[in-house]
Image 1 (cartoon, rainbow, N blue to C red):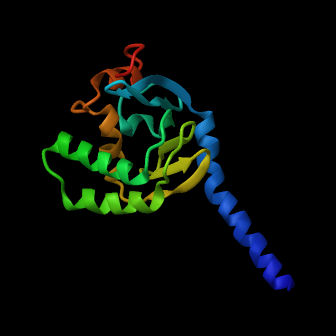
Image 2: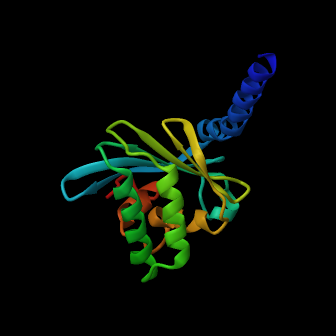
Length: 176
């Protein structure tokens, strides 16, 4: 019984150690910019970009980079994954096998969201991406190529939401 209890304590403490650094990092970062994303006449989410010093010039220079989405509508996990694939295709002209592989990982990590939920993507200093949902870690995508391609959906030159990109980069006050 003592061994079983000790094992549970160790498991819980290791879980807390795995999630606490990302959550602590999230709250220590300074906002670069923020903006509203709307589709037609629906407000979908408020987005916020943050870094250690509140500045953004590149993924390499500014890691960790946090993109936080606060949802204003209910959206299913399946719709998220489909929209992510659509964005990669729009930006790159075609989907590669890596995009399909990443979509499978995201399907396992992400949750359906309700109005008021917060989904965050933390591009860590080690080059990996950790997702959290309402402050709780969902897990890590361990492919170092994922971070920049994922964040480019919002921050890349070929984004389908250029006004939101400018707002996130602190270059204007409005999203799109």
